[in-house]
Image (cartoon, rainbow, N blue to C red):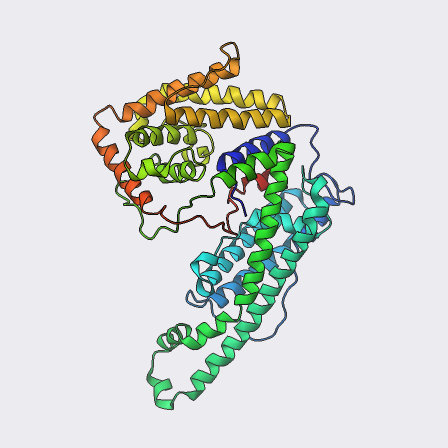
Length: 470
């Protein structure tokens, strides 16, 4: 699918944050009008949504072993089921909320364990992480409930949610049956050993040998078609869910903002990085942002890959500027610069006051957006950001109307970002930072020599949006 621009995700989250705290906004509702948490039926509704069927396939409980992913899945599944049973018996509001949090945690544990199974069975290119908010969204829709702000799209996403839930149930059933088959194979292997070998050998060593054997690997491969089906259904549902959120925010503009802009940038894509960037150079919260920002800048054609490969001076100036902007917008969840700037990395530590001015100006721009919740306002907000990015790369601030207060704020942000970023390249830290950028550019320069191939797993993992609205 087409990859969403992380800044668009940030803007969607901003809008959904605002909508989620509006007094007029309804609490998540169901078709049965159980539409607020004080309703005595609400605990029953939530318990019904979260409930999963216990699996009764017989066989003995396996020993929990790190090298046996099927045993990890078994115990994660059992704990998940137990937490949902506990939830169904809670009526006290505080106890119910605590148990509900426990169920979400157990679902995350199961999904993370399922990712381990992927790593053992599928090729690296086929893997993806399963985010619990996506799964919870599917549970909500599969139980004839609606997702806040996406009521209009229920008929579109509910069938996809049902398919995903069925695929997950199939995975649970198949892995449980494979576990019993595994126990049978292990027992036969043990019985086929001679009495002398069985008596004197180390049982733990014998178990380890079995779990690393071709026989065991072939057993795990039986789950592959079911995993592939789950991945397909998950990605399809996740993709559609994100597109519905973006459509809710941008309306008629969502096609322009996502599809057309991304199609222009489909000429190149970074391949999977074979070698990691040196940790000693990319270890603080500023330098760790550089690869993320540069990848986006190249993919969206904000910067030209040739300027990176040729070590163009423009690139050395542009990347730290774009990184400062990203650190106070779509990467603020990593930096915390919008909430706490008392502890900054050494590169920008002396610019607390300037960074504070930037965040205040961005707050003003975002407040203007939130006061005018229209498609045009959101579209203009994104265009303003894109114009600011282009200006930071070219070195020219685009001021069309000096009387426009928003454009005055844009100019202030532009000048303050240039002040901070450019000072890094004109201080006693210049040589050290230039070394960091040289490593970064050489690393990226060798990765962008292939033709872009669109990935089915291109959905961003910015799942905070779902947490806001479900």
